[in-house]
Length: 405
Image (tube, rainbow, N blue to C red):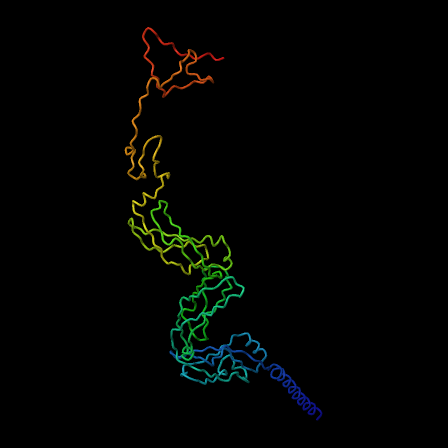
């Protein structure tokens, strides 16, 4: 009897011990290890029918709240989870697409508590294409800038846009924005600028070239200038001899006299102008850097070529191109020297023969011939003496040089 009671007690004790152990294991496995967490799913789209584009409602990520084993959830966070949305049944207009994230193999071991958003509302529209002009939205220069900006040119000035019909049809132009203060140097400038466009709109080409120039701020002034004429021979005349010119010059050089003196007005004779003929020729302006012509009064001047007779009469008697009327007692022609001038045209006087009484020759003393007062040899070359020839009986004495003292 006592043995049966002990056996029954051991059996009950074993059952209770097993229940406590099972309860503890269940708590450790089920109660302690099961936690809740939230994961992000990256959304991809496929199967969109051709000719359609989704304009609104597309989501890039989904948030899913899960419950499961901590160890499994820890491994799930380290993986790239992607949910693919099938768009093969999408029609033009609004489309409601439920999300079945529970069908994903990676999420089946877990209990899905919530999906945000629970479904996607997509607005599908037809794809269209059209040409749209570009509008310049150049930012202004600072007020204290010494430069002014010329009109801006865009190349190309039109682009092709492609996208949802509602967005494309609403575009009147596309803005091109640029800040010219990035390069404040006088002269021509060029920059490639990206074209701003709405999302989901494709632009071809996506970049345009912007060209402009910066010039110094200018002021208008008026100057009177004498016409300069490159005519050394005086063959041409010009009428009028002065012109009035309106200029645009940098405002910081308006009162710079050296700068203004560099303004010149010149005239070139018309080619092939016959003697005595006239022609209207526009004056040529020579300007310093930064100056621009606004107006010239008169716009043309008359250039006249003198005739041959008037050109000869105009030469002065003492100029290098004429001969004086009298030169060393010779009567010379009064007309100027022409290109056919020859010395044979001048009547030279007949040379007079020298007479014996006109020549006075000093006798040459022996030992002193060929010497001057300083003792230097005196040359007799070019002097002709009229002396009688010596007779054979009277030889001439040789001329010898004295011994040096």
